[in-house]
Image 1 (cartoon, helix red, strand yellow):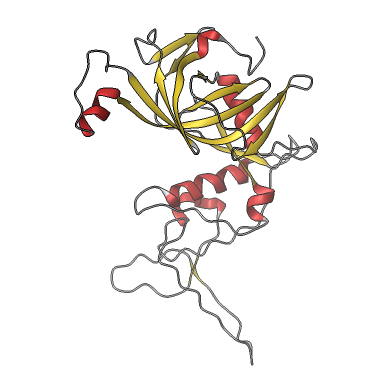
Image 2 (cartoon, rainbow, N blue to C red):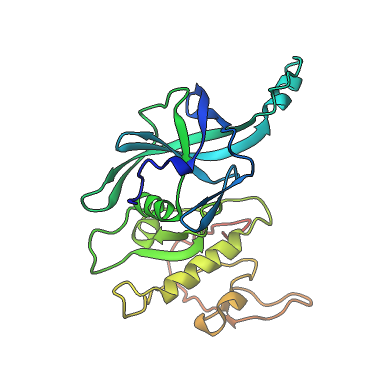
Length: 268
């Protein structure tokens, strides 16, 4: 079976409502459990963040699962009576991209956004693991120059059957970027994991990257994360019981130079 073929075993339901990029699907009656087996693998149905697809010939529309609920819950919220047949399970999907599978060279032409919207009663299908890998490779803009690989694997995607997550460091470090999240969500850990992966990356398959990375670390979080792979400086002497980590930094006196101080509440 080729990737992105229309496979009946992967169908999980049909569309009952289309509202912009949000669609609602009703799970098929043969979906008795929220799993589906296909070619020796077990795939989850309705997991938040997992991806489904809708076929338009060779064109496909992709969406994230955002909600799974019973139809009876909607009727209760609307104050309507609950008929015996109102035990269907309903999923909400947020459409995010389109693609065209090019079977001749085995690649997916990926386009962000949706220009072709599905219609009610169209079928909705699970993605296989191989299809998920191809989808993310296309979304990551897989390299065309095979001599140098700028894609650095540093994590796995949630809800994507452990498909590798890669960062294109040419694009990431060639422009401004930010890691955003609430307090305690793991921003600093994500930055450290990414930088470790960059240091271990072999763009030509044999030689390690040797980037020059400067981290302004007002909270002293990254010194221990990199150990002897980093040279740690401190900009001030410790106060009270603070630990004196790193060597004091020495800046030369420059007559007539302007000094700009940039404050940050949190690194990452």
